[in-house]
Image (cartoon, rainbow, N blue to C red; front, side, top):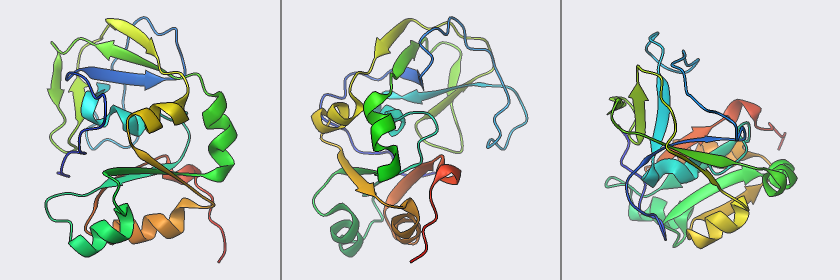
Length: 183
C-alpha cells in the first residue's frame, strides 16, 4: 500500500467524500468498478487527506505525487523541488478545469471500511445517502489555498513515466485520457 499523502493547508477533520460534477445525487448505490479487483458492488469514498486528488473534472487525466518514507533525497529534489504535494495535468484541460462545477458529497462513515489495497479509499457494500454537499468552487484556487503545487504539462506521459520509475509515492487518475505526444 502506498504511503498516505501529506496533509495540506486547511485540511480539516477526517471525513469520507465522493466528488462529482453531478450536484443532484441523493443516494449512492453500490456498483462494480472497472478497475477494482473485486467483482462485488461497492460505494467508493475517499478520505479528507486524499480528496484533493479529485479536485478536477471527472475525466481529466492527472498525476499526483509526494514524498514517502522510502523516497530518496535525489527524487524529492528532482520531482517535488520543495513542494509537499504536486498535482500535474495537461494544458488541454485548463479551460475545462476553470469552468468545472464540482461538488463533494460528505458521506456517513458507518457502513464504510478502508480499502485493503489502496490507502485513502473506503468501501461500502450498502447504499449511502450523503450528509451534505459542498460546492468546491474554483479548482485552481482550491489547490493554491491548500498549498498543493499544480503543474501544467503538454502531455503527462514524459513526467508520469519518470515519476512511476522513481521512489516518490504517486496516484494517477484517468491516465487513459492523456495525450501521447511524440517527442
